[in-house]
Length: 221
Image (tube, rainbow, N blue to C red; front, side, top):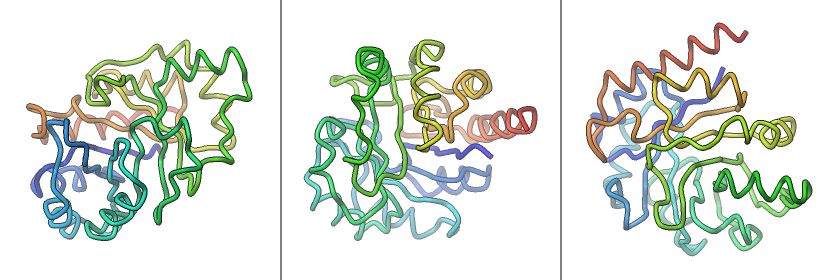
């Protein structure tokens, strides 16, 4: 089954709704410029209420590795997600958790076309997976915009046999099935597509998103 992460949690109610809907993971944003940014204490309180089966993933943007490790310990995170420029020098980001490294999707596709061997994943410490998103240096995530899935198909296909690929950016219950059909990723990550407003989830949108993923899984099996 496709791994489903619902990111940008700011309160216990939303996190429990995601878990009850069947999400495999929830995310906590520690990027100060994000409207979804939470404190370590808030993340810890939310994480402590979640079922053990649900991954608790912290999202970081150009934080120092030791800071990431410290927050992961304090908040009870099971994994971390590097959502800044860390992929450009991944060997510098060794932390005490499994790590997802996020790539700007179309930049990665462009570089892949120019040099298919440019992404040396052996350099990525504790690699849990590669995430592809539509964010930019100005807006790191939660943009509500998709990237060009068809253009990215060959890149995802090349990564897929060896690595867990997670697709993010502009996903919602109406388009996630198409994303799965085109890209066939290991997982998907949703933020704005299940929100009532930035930082507040809409429980019905969360349930609809997970249902759409599971229905696509059934059709594709």
